[in-house]
Image 1 (cartoon, one colour):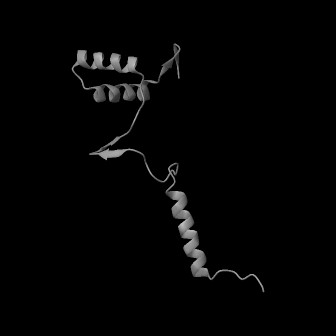
Image 2 (spheres, helix red, strand yellow; image 1 turned 180 degrees about the vertical axis):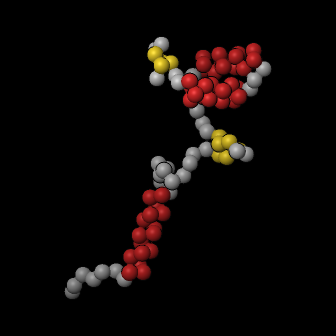
Image 3 (spheres, rainbow, N blue to C red; image 1 turned 30 degrees about the vertical axis):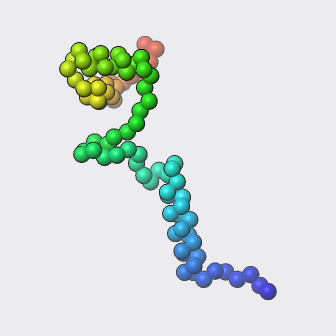
Length: 89
C-alpha cells in the first residue's frame, strides 16, 4: 500500500479551515479589540483606584466627564510627549 496525497479540493478545504482557526484565535491580529460607538472605539483600561479618585476630582473641578479628561490627557501625551521620572520620552 502506498501513501497517496489528498485531492487538491480536500487539501484546499483543510488549508482554509486551518487559516480560519488561526485567525479566530484570541491573540490574532486580524481583529481589533473594543466596540465601536459612533466614530469612537470603546476599550478597557485598568487604572489604580487612587488615580481614578484624582481623575474624578479633576473632572468635577473642570466640569468635564471622566472620559473627556482621559481623551484630553491622551491627546496631550501624543502631541507633547510623556514625562516619566522628570524626563521627556
